[in-house]
Length: 99
Image (cartoon, rainbow, N blue to C red; front, side, top):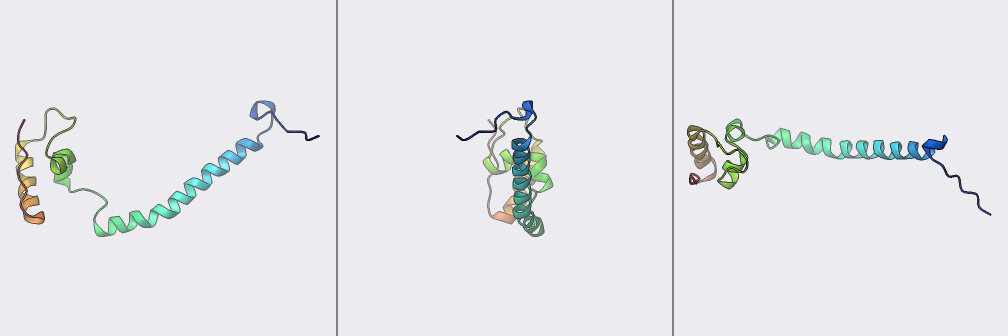
């Protein structure tokens, strides 16, 4: 007959919990090891963060042409400045229509 060791942490057996913690720490280490070089490269080439003006206006407006959640919307001057800035960098960009 095979005798199975049952119980768990409530019965004083912490082996399974230790294995779970070891697995979690392994996954955290694995992800950190793989993603750190990727984030360093993104930061080096300037793709890690958006422009401060785009952050102020909101990515919904700068990329999709309309606000998603903020019902007050950004200041009109900021949107116009963003459109002018993106026109020079990425070709002609039209201002989002007001709804």
